[in-house]
Length: 458
Image (cartoon, rainbow, N blue to C red; front, top):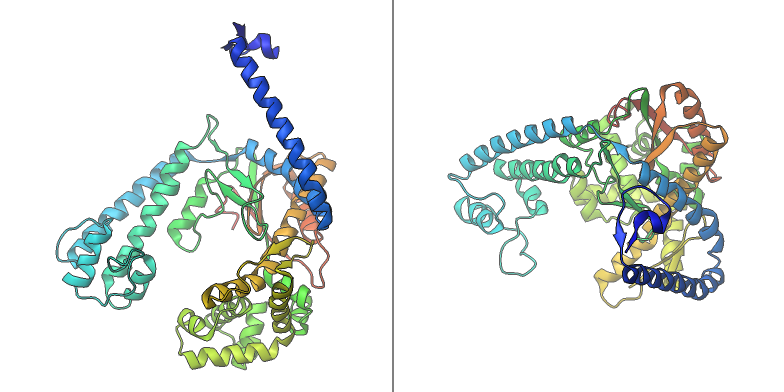
């Protein structure tokens, strides 16, 4: 028998392996290395043929080292606060359950689709929507409940109950179990999972923490800085619309961003025919929906539903938008044409994004593919930019000899753990590197805040 320190030269944790086990491990390691080399020999020429070698070696490979350090360092959590939050969510769920049972005229299992179907559509006589996937019953999913919420209070309470259940189980309870001895949680970042090239996060997923509700935002309070440090969050402002302005050279978008105007306020001003000073917060919200909805292929029916307006009103919004932003619309149409001709679209840094089903005889599949042809170049380019920014920031931090650490990437946002003494220097450094990551026709803008917790840094 050979001990662990005899094999590795380390005197820690003496673990004994048999010679047979060592031989098996050696053979496996050799086979693994050989398979990797064979893949390299096969795939590298294909990468070079498609002109993707620069993207691979200058973006994705350097990024891998940064992601490894992020994963190993982890993010510090306040597990005591998470436990307290779990208890609060549990109490709220119990109260909601009582209210739901009262409205349902009797108790039932809220987590049973069959019992919920009986309560909603038979006992209470609510109008049933779509069928379940198996076509054996009436659906009680969140989309159906959202539609019923205007008709009956029970649907709204059920949505609240489900949201709290997910927050409690997925975050308040699960995150605590995933921390190491130092109280840090270590996610895994994936570079080759999403179709657009965006990073994804798993085990646990730290990119999907809800922020639209007050309860969801409280989860971020558990992400804390160690003593003497602060959390610094830097978020690209309206990155996808800036990318669209650059790719399309739309004069209205380019003018608005060059003047540092609020793009949603300007859109509202144009759509509603008002001076910017007269635009209300509700008008701005509608304009934001229009900006993102139309550029991603949303039709009048869907837009009307999302805005809560009549379909003919949504049609007028779309017509006015297309007239004002003819440059952007022409670019989006060219993306569909490129997908039809080449079977793929490309991003700012030349990433190739395949568009399957673009010639499908199935209308639904073809429409979905056309929306992806519009969506992918914009989201993929935004992903290219923030990846480039991560490399620039990492290099600059190291060159400056700082000890600040990049600890999370959440779509368009970078989150840092910064010693208080380095905060001012890091703010300047991060802003500089993120705004010059990729040269666009319009300026990149970064919103930056800091605090003791991730929540305070928003």
